Image 1 (tube, helix red, strand yellow):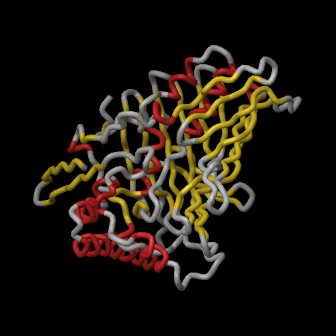
Image 2 (tube, helix red, strand yellow; image 1 turned 90 degrees about the vertical axis):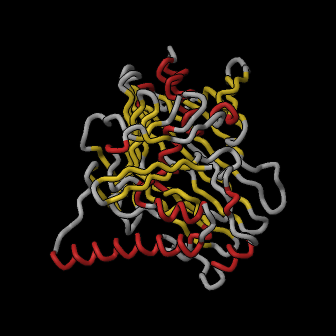
Length: 386
């Protein structure tokens, strides 16, 4: 179910725990789930007022999967069966590239598991992974509020993407909705094209229990005069026909002329319909994208940073995997207590924490922004087998 590798540095022992990526079924290895999960989840929110911001809501390890939010965020970039990024870069025409980028954007919508959540990353936590020539680096650049930054470069394909993610979860009585703020950029450098996009909201419904993505996503490319509007839709009440739906259009920015209609489901297939010819084409197949997802492995144990997610949370993950809940709670408290101590020390010295790999900005108009310090992401000590 998981891989665990250890390296000793002097008297210190570094643990690295890496687990399988989320599949189409969410956490495929959720055999460690506590019993009566739905009742436990409902009991969590018994004393929470509707409309409350859950950003700082604390979960016990009973409700955690053995990985960090930073790792899950990264998986959407480097865990895939079909390389839609390569497909986008190799397409000959601008409209073909745009359609492929739409498909890639949909592929980053990963299915979480109801009732279980990753760990909240600590300030300065990192996750550095390579898959072939694609190198991905993430850093938690703010803890209150939680903001994650991602930078990925592929020298072979000559592409780059930069994401900034700031989730804001709120409780609405029968559901939790997490608005995912922050801009995402994909640059196809061979073509001089930059694509900007946002993320849909994550919705957790209690009765009946389910997880889905909802809301609008807009994808723009100024260089090609193309835009897309996608709407993620879920079913109402007991109906299931609308679950996981994606509908939208691709159009010219200047004339607003619709070129293609988009329709399908993000967990199965999505197709586009050419408005002029009426021809329909499947542009996204979730089974292809999520096929044969492989667990990352440690290639260079000496290169693992102390801030690596798989190291920071290793003892907690080991406790969850073995269902040793007391050990998991103790290890999680240890991580959180250490962070509170470091924060107090900084405050007492009047110091401000500064990210190691990104520069961060914030404004009321644009929200949080993150720019990488390095032009290229170096190869990582953790790799995804090809």
